[in-house]
Each structure stands twice: as structure tokens, then as C-alpha cells.
Length: 319
View (cartoon, helix red, strand yellow):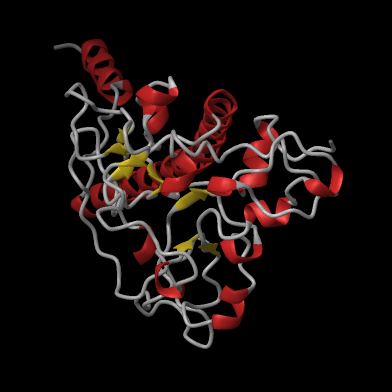
């Protein structure tokens, strides 16, 4: 090989591409760690956004059903009875109210498995589910759902009236002025109890000033309950009651399905609409485990009787 050839081969070797050395195990571990952290942040952000969307959707869903219930009242002068939540979708009587036509009573009268009667209301089954696919629990004082009493009508109650209710607890009809039933007389002891449950279940003074109190004429026309992300106490569309852990004495205890209707004016069984909370109140500070009385992830709707009747254009009026 001549000198020129040797020089040319040397130049080729000099300018040939240099292949990068491989990653060490430590470098690969660092890269994987960074990728994992990035994915974790993305998943947490996505999960948080989805959770926020579901929490917004549950309020919209409850508001939508409130309108459907008011429309039912406008036509029927009563509220619907609950449907039997233990009946699977597609089975006979799924989504149909449990009204005994002859007696005018809800069956079962204690509504221990009552959910929204979507068929009776003329809404879709999806409208009766919350964003976590639990059926929305529905409770109503049986008298307000009676097809014989037709109590959801205050159009013959007069704000200037002072008379007592007529037979069966209805507003006196064909009356004028003070001879008409007063709204307060009509509303007394009607509806359901709902308490905000704060700051703790033993706060009797706070319970005495609750927003929905039948004794003071502010009873809830009905109570709808989404059992929240945990789903504890909700029926799914297969008619199965969802399990879960609720600490004894929790604010959620009265809201759980598979139990009798809450007894008005009894603190221990008053429906709760507490703040969303899984931590104890001060002076107990997280990260201690949740304490009895504080766990709560339910969403409720519990308008007063007057609020529903005003939506249905059946509220009190001057005569």
C-alpha cells in the first residue's frame, strides 16, 4: 500500500462517526423515575379534573330531577313513591313507583330500599344514576305521595288565612281571605327532617335550628341522596346494595339505604347534608384517621314543600 492510500484510510477512520456509549443502569433508573413522576403528575391532574367534573355533574343531575319531580306534582298534586332499588334494570317493575293504589300508600311504607322512580317520572334510567353509577336514593313522607290525599297543593291556602286545615289535612277549598287555611297551619308537621350535621352529631342546639324541620313548617318535600364517590349505601343498576365502610356515628349513617325512613324530629335519624369531609375537626388534626361523625361524601337535594309547590305553580295565593 503506498503512502497516499495509507493517508486516505487514516482520514476515513478519523472522520468516521463515533457510536455513543450505552446508558448505565443508574442513568436508566433516573430516566424511568422522571418518566414515572411525570406520568403520576399527569394522572393525578387528570383524575382531579374528572373528579371535579363528576362533582359538578351530580349537582346538575339532582337539579334536573328536581324539575321532573315538580312537573309530576303539577300534574298529580302529589309526589311519587320511591321505586324498589333492589330490582335489577330491565326486570319487571324496575323504576316504577311502589304505590298501593287502593290504600294510597307507598309500599314498602318504610322505603328501606327506595330509589328514584325513573319510569314513573318519565326520565331515563341514566338520569336516576349519579356519576359514580349508583342509583339515587329517594325518600318521601308517605302522606305526601298518597294518591288519595293529594296533599301537594296549596293553591287554596291564603297568606292572609288563619283557618286550620280541612279534612285530611288539605287547604280549605272555596274559601275567602281569613277563612282560608293559613300556610303555616297547612305545613305544620309535614315533610322530612334534614340537618347539616355540623359541627358534630351531638350538637343538639345546631340540630334545633335545622333548615328542614316539619315542626316549624319547613319540612323537606323529599330527600334525594347521591352516595358520592364511595357509593356506600347506594343500589347499582343490578339491584345490588353497594358495600362500604362508614364509621359508627358518621354523618352518613342516617342517609344509608336499606333502612327505614327517618323519623321526623329524631336527631339520630335525621337525614344529613354535611360538608364534604373525611377528616376530624380541630383540635384533632390530619393525618389522623377519620373520626366518627365526620366522614361524608354524599350529595343531597331536599327542597321544602313550599319550594316544590312554587315550582309546580301550586303555592299559596290570595283568594
